[in-house]
Length: 416
Image (cartoon, rainbow, N blue to C red; front, side, top):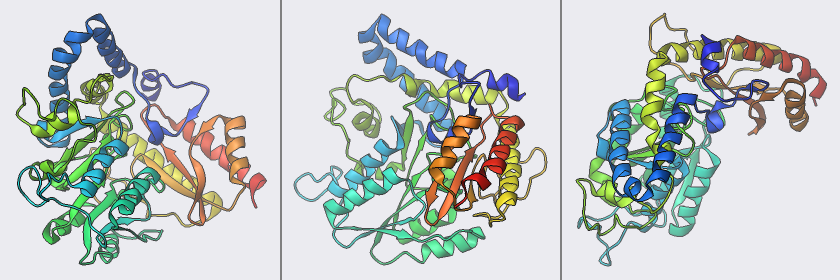
């Protein structure tokens, strides 16, 4: 199975590609669909951008909305989650005042003020951290990073530890669904529930979630959620979405003001009007999403995820056996055949982060590439050296074995 699936991707066959988490990899059928839209655009640019693309965007958003369990007009496409979060963060800083301190709907806007707090963890993605720090610079708010020590233990303990950082000044909770540096799946449902009851806005970075774990946004019940479709869903590069709960959509200002503002022909959703049209740009990555969803359905992606999850469990165990270091999270219980992956207690799925002993990181990275052609993120995090491994459908046991062989052979040679 893995060989036939590997042939559906354009990855260099001489590279052991274990870094799907960074930028994803697009299957041939999805890339061909994307290129087909680009060719259609070039044949008749005016009609495509003014008529055809609008229809296709509705179809694409409908397919994605069904996939994640929300309404079609509650989702907007952006090129990446960083851009999407900037829409949210800048809106919270400026709160789209109309000159009288009210939102365009006449309601008091949600506006960050001096002394307000944005609560997050210390496992977040660097671009997002910088975005929120910039907003704090603009507003005088505080960016509070709650320390989440590793190894993590239980989901209940995680929730209580994180929630202990909430204060009367907490206005926003920002968390990753699956973290970038540690690849941990954070248990968000209970945090979102508590935040809703406390009147705290929840903003979730799900960059690594969609396509890797089952995702139902209606059940999660976050206020705002963004994810990168070009990662684990494997759409064409430059495709992410921003979901916003309907009753808070009026709070979000367009990051780019264009014809959707004061629209001459308004559609049924002002949220879509304000954010979708940004002038001439390549919309084809957004339009590739239905092809990506179909590709995974056609290839029994639940079985693919299960195979990758089991390979991740086994490979992580083998790597930690070499160093005798404690893993950063408990080993998942292997669910029975046919069960959803991951089960409710899993801390990781297709991507994991393994601790390594203190080594010359630059030398280890160079030798892994020069001698084994392994592409995988390796670097320091806190006081640890960590190796982050992604297993996607194109990977097989040979890739895992090559990684373990490289780590076994090279660790003694690069130890400090």
